[in-house]
Image (cartoon, rainbow, N blue to C red; front, side):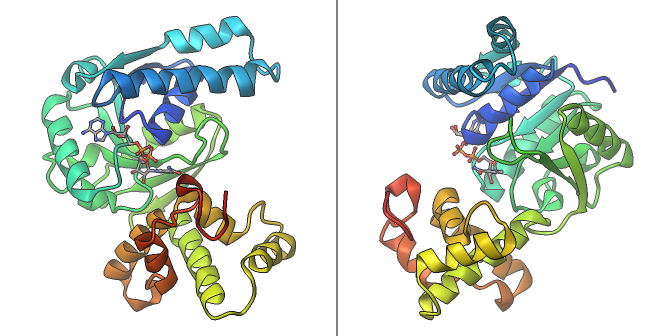
Amino acid sequence: MDIKKICIIGAGIMGHGIAQLVATHGYDVNLVDVNDEVLNKAKASIEKSLNRFFVAKNKITAEEAEKILDRISLNVNRDDAVKDVQMGIEAVFEDITLKQQLFSELDAICDKDVILASNTSSLSITDIAIKSKNPDRIVGIHFFNPAPVMRLIELIKGKNTSDEVLKTSKKFSESLNKTVVTVNDAPGFVTTRLIYVLCNEAANMKMEGIASTEDIDIACKLAFNFPMGPLELSDLVGNDIYLHIGEYLEKEFGDKYKPCPILKEMVDKNLLGRKSKKGFYEY
Ligand SMILES: NC(=O)c1ccc[n+]([C@@H]2O[C@H](COP(=O)([O-])OP(=O)(O)OC[C@H]3O[C@@H](n4cnc5c(N)ncnc54)[C@H](O)[C@@H]3O)[C@@H](O)[C@H]2O)c1
């Protein structure tokens, strides 16, 4: 199957980043969200990112940036937007019910050979596909934020994902100039499960008074050459997101993944991190 055009559903942080990435690599994109306001904001963010990080740094010309933008069409009508594509990538909220519903609808509308991918960062691909009649075409393509810059794609094989769909998805991911790791379906995959454990343990140490917030982060950065400390990272991603991931992993795997109690307290007090201007640090 030759992929030329892709529909991306959800134009938030990840959806618009993925749109920019795939359009930069020559694919046409139909970008879908619930209203024009979100879509226009997404396109403005893509334009800003292209100019600031690529044109200004002489990585691409202004004409190339213009062409990339021209490859991205905005659409509030999802059913129209998936008509002429060879792949759909979903980047809506991290909610299993929403994703199951979306995939069963896409499965009913799209031609049988269209690949349907989820950008979920933790949910089981097998579960996401549970209401779909053709789960063999459903796969996880996990991009990282910011999608145009981060070097990894985690490719997730659901229990029913066909080998052919996995192979085409791998070839597509590599065409974006990313390194691809292939993972069998399990909650949190490799990356989210690992980073959650690190950030949650750092929160536990903070709660136990083992060291200050700053010292926990400095220790991690200088001892392991990490670009960010775990508490800084938790603030960046959102303490609510880590709590949500922890609750899910605890439900699936047991007590070992129990979220640190201070994460819950912080979320209750709206100490979400950068987005609420206060978390482990103040912004
Ligand atoms: N933010 C990250 O760092 C990151 C990294 C990797 C993966 N992810 C995953 O990517 C997905 C999206 O995360 P995000 O951070 O971009 O979220 P976000 O909140 O920034 O964007 C979600 C977008 O989906 C839209 N949406 C919701 N329901 C829709 C529907 N039915 N049809 C069309 N659009 C709909 C919303 O309007 C919103 O614009 C999640 O599954 C998340 O776990 C996030």
